[in-house]
Image (cartoon, rainbow, N blue to C red; front, side, top):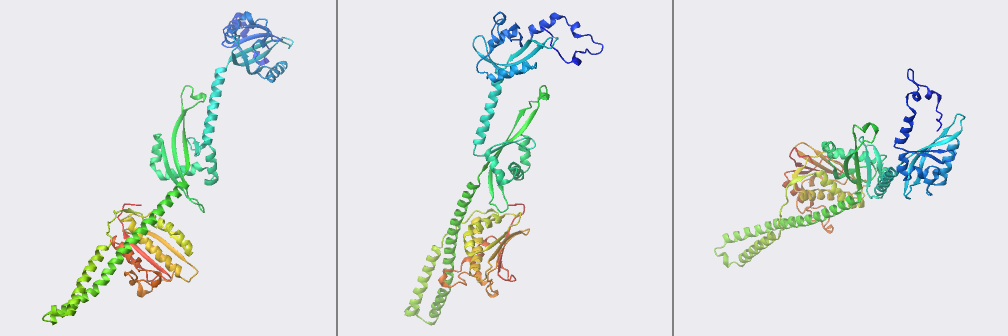
Length: 521
């Protein structure tokens, strides 16, 4: 076998070191080839095998005697494309090494994938005299690579087909992998929805977020509200899983290192939240309607009893006067009739008192007035739109909770809102504005409801809170109990309700309710 040519500078021994060919005995080169872990074969210029080492025998299944003198094509198999062999020979004819993958066939007919390198061996005149072939069986490596690729493709297909947005983030929360559902969110939430949602989760969870991350504790089904200008609010259910993988770089071969990742799954639950909100508002509407009906009936009966007490007391006084004037009052027909009237009247009053619906009471609990008013404004939206009322809602950023009865408080503010809407509806002014605001005043919470209606005359400032007082005509079926009910509820909660006489034009109703400290809503 002729020695292949190499660059001149590579043949120059280092200073002070003898020529390697003179140091290494020739038989060592043969032993190296014989004991090499690669399958090595040497062919003539026509690819006829002249030599094969023991590893070649193990890989191919052919003994040395079976291949010597035969063409290297004895190992070829038809599934290798013709273009591969054409490229191989084109490279060798240019006296350049070729490396590639071939499907070879063993003696027993089984196939394997060979990673083959063929190097032309040139003589002193630069002519190709032999070819040095070295190959190894990479079938198992190829199988594992394809298996990883198949698993990766399968996982990506499943992730893309998922009905929830999925995104993989690195330690710095940069997006590494996402699916189609996540890409849809980009148009809704901006360039990087993951950053927006992660910021919202940190704000919502607080220090617990970093604690969960440090302990690699997952977070499940955390609901996040994203508010956007001029758009409906969006609700998302987010889950987070932290995991790690071994670093595959060469630096980590002897010193294993781990990389940490975050898997964020995002499900849009906006429609579900809207449905839940609609159900809740409808339930609140039904509850308040029933509460108003019962409260109105209770107040109406109580008012009727109160109104009947006066005439009945006068009848009793008349009977007593007759008794004092007559020596034998029992013989006086008028006295007898009056006495029967008083007795029957008292029985009727007791019947009315017994007919007053029983107030079962309601559990006292912390109540967020911002939430109560927000729900009532949403409940009143159809009425406000029909009346052309523009509402300026100005809630306090942080409002302490008050101790109260939620349903009664909802009834209170619904009465005030309905009263303001009715005033605006009857107003002949083209401008119909309402402003609702809340304020933390330290020891109490203040709610102010202002409207641009006709207002309340000074002489009616206190009278409007009396039962059965109404400025509406009888044909409008107003009992005049709305503000009386509101005043009663405020009194039960230890608060005050008044009309600001200085507010012009329109009406300003102010409600003040005591609240304990240290219980933010």
